[in-house]
Length: 269
Image (cartoon, rainbow, N blue to C red; front, side, top):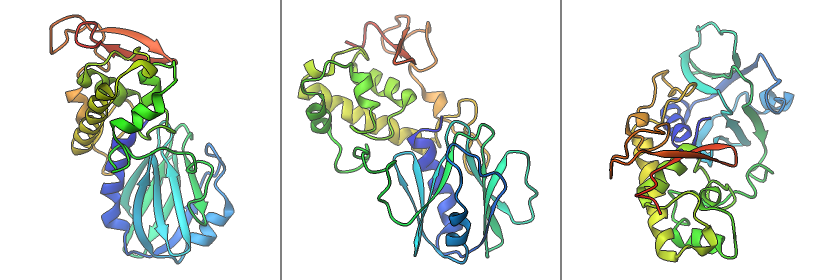
């Protein structure tokens, strides 16, 4: 599933083509996504100018004068900027056609993504989200306070979108390795200093991933159809049994809440 760096990479890639441009039409070929695409979406967006392309957690927000288009890429969704003459393929479900001669095409083979029309940002999928990990409201203190009295492990804590958004499985593995913290550590027993180290590692890993254009695992491609390259920098994720780059020990794996978790038994404590 595309995580925060992949979504931010997509946002940065499509924004120059959309901002300040008029939506000439909206074409919905398949409305049966994870949540049905409403008929209201085409009616409200057509004829509107894009004011900004923003992101909240893993949601893309196309801001118009009268509301927002909110997109989630789901498991296999992607967006492409294409000439308006480009013929659609089997899994191309929604087009935003612009008067500049390009279109934004939403492709989703598995149809687990979504495209919503919002009159404002008061929406059930947005209301309970925690702070952005790269924003000023996030810090080690944020995590420390959220962990008090909790018996759940630290990996589960940082993947909770009510605590901090956008730290998906790949980047949780990498941040815990970088900070030297074992993923099974009980969060409520961890010190503020360890959480400060973890918060800094989360920010470092996510920043590097955005700079590299995201991580391409199976379905994700950038908005121009090319892969992200952060996978070449992964230290633990997907490397079970390989040697730790820090100490040479064999990396171990386990499953936490059903998700693959890889760590170094020596470097992470």
